[in-house]
Length: 296
Image (cartoon, rainbow, N blue to C red):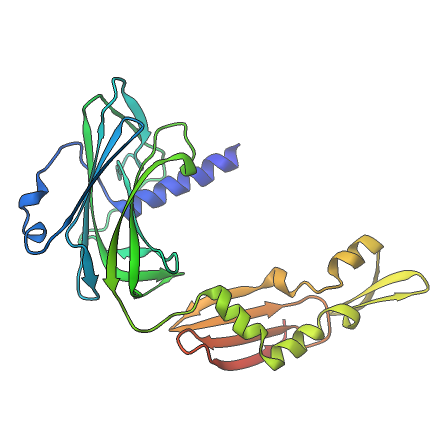
């Protein structure tokens, strides 16, 4: 239970960092310059007595535009609602995310001018009947790919606003979605799953996998079971033999996005030397740039 609470605390802490600090006051944003220059989105929906209003400064964007989302939630019911609101030092009334429908990647938020260090406590607030809370978040047309930020791909994106009543799970948060489009980069960055597939189709990788699975690492002699570890053959039981004979290189797999490439690395405690292999795949062209084996 303590572990679950800690994980949940970190989720809320991450939300506070991502979404910034909200307000419990209503501001008329329709008069703001960014909502006048071009036609903007003004979407409303009510769920479970919670009324959402989402404003986005444009409907369509390119790679030079900032994406400004202003969201409000109003309690239309007759009872107050306790809800999760980030941490006590970084209050966040609503979660706001922008997610690509094509590749499920998240857009990056514009860094604040004065970054704030947030505590990791769980903060709750109470939304009274007819009371409204507000969040304003500015996004950049850049997608998160692991720890990197790359120009957004073209296509449709979901703008998701979440209100999280206390006692409900993250999946049970009340969510409302509208959509925008981005005329993004012409570069098609492949997913890490596709990069792994490309790597596994390479002849050198297939040879390495063959040497670290099946008969190369497992044998039966005189009704006794053996596995070839990196330091030699070792007797084992049938259950472990059956579990490991197909190889364990997937258990120590790493796939990292680095400077426009996917680096796929496999390690294996079973099988002959070399016990590791690293494949670098161009994330745009899907070309295998290098394949190198190494020792553990």
